[in-house]
Length: 451
Ligand code: SF4
Image (cartoon, rainbow, N blue to C red):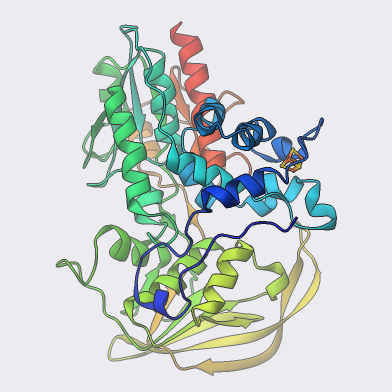
């Protein structure tokens, strides 16, 4: 039987709105898709999932028309099925391991998970107060997951968020056409209903320090402040007006609603997005929607090496984004303080580098491109604010040479009762489900520690 497909918004229409591109499977499709699962004895899909969701079991419950049971099974390990069903790179994780994918199409595990998440609610728990208090710094995937597990154990949980809205990168980074805000709001409301306290506009490291949190009687602290420090190109012209990091561009549009609020965003005609990951796709597809006439993605390797999800690449192409492969940025040209163009070196692929991917090598040939805006999507590093302020107060947090907090298997830092996870202390690929896995591990270690 063929894999069931979700329906997608018309490729031309969606260029003008931020509504979800994909709809859910229908109930009938869910039954058909669930019936494709072989219920393998040794389910490789589970091994491919970073939090080991019991995939065959939840699919079996769907086959038996028991969606509530499916929801219960998923939420044993994942608090955010509606989010993960939308943003996880399933083709590299669960679906990438499904045996049906060897000769045909894998089971649409992500779409089934999303359907279950959207159509079931988290169970209500009886919470027995433990008398202990835990601070969670950051309200992204790791923070939300840890807060839920800590609260279930009876602790008073306070989540500190630097921005005025909750959700971290799920809110400011991932555009609503990939993750509708109703989905995110529902997950956060669940936590509020469990009694988790949220304090927004609190920048830990500035408004309050780690030492003060300890003095305020928090019995444990979980740092999951994300990776908010953009990596830039370090080339001539990068200081010109209309050069953005992808973080800034997406935050202006997604969080600050630029154009609809006093937050400004100059919409030019032609934009160059530099990078090939999911954030580059998000930035390019957002640029299409805010009104740029021509959106390019420049990447220094070939299409084969693009790190973004295949689905995001396909969606970007359908929406008119033009890909320029084997181009490495050399200089940004300016006129009157604003971007007026870019210079690229044409590359070719050489020998594989340490990542196993063939290394781009300059050919000595250069091309000029006419653009008025540049968005740099080369990844981010950890925001060093908390570490710096803690170090200044004599609480020296160990970090690696790139600034990521060093943690053990339980996500414990070198400081007593201080844990870290998610993008500020990544283990494996940086994505929503790995951040959730870190939140779960840290919460378990804290719960064990607090008895
Ligand atoms: S590997 Fe595929 S077919 Fe086997 S249990 Fe997992 S989803 Fe079902």
